[in-house]
Image (cartoon, rainbow, N blue to C red; front, side):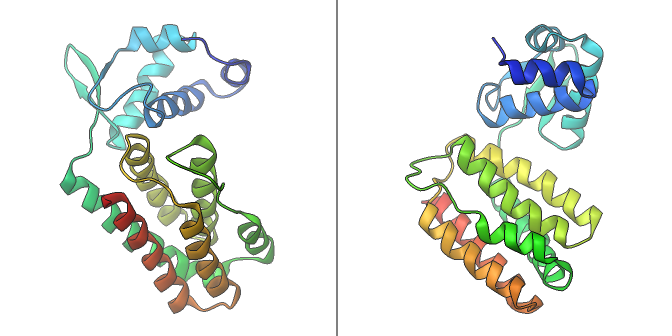
Length: 215
């Protein structure tokens, strides 16, 4: 598989394990490495033009996060998401991101609020796209970090990886207008420094995402 120049430069200039981890994850969420497929150290090392060592370490991190599963003497399996796990993922989002929004209402700064207000979902989306994924990931990531709880933000990031896999596997179709409306309600609560309303708006947003995914 031919990689673009940006990825080549990143692999040469950045910490190898972190960069390989990013590329494997990107291939998983885009479906290049499909759920239920087997992946092998040698194949990935050749694809990313690196040795097996950073690939092995990156896969170990992904295994720890529950994204891949190690099968002795076979390689690594890209995990699938069943109905029970689907429900668990959205339950975790409600719990974690609702709390993050509550804390962010107390701790977010003006620069972060301004950035949130400027973010808009790409219109005309008929399915998951890289542009929409980047937008949603950025929006929720700002709020997670604004909670000023490093551990909470890290847990949200891990959970969001599963959300991306769901979306790229075709579960749910983004509706830009709904996302903008729900995100606006969250930002208004944050701007008004109302922790309870911010948490409620975030939970309602995630429940809306879940309902649209089930459709």
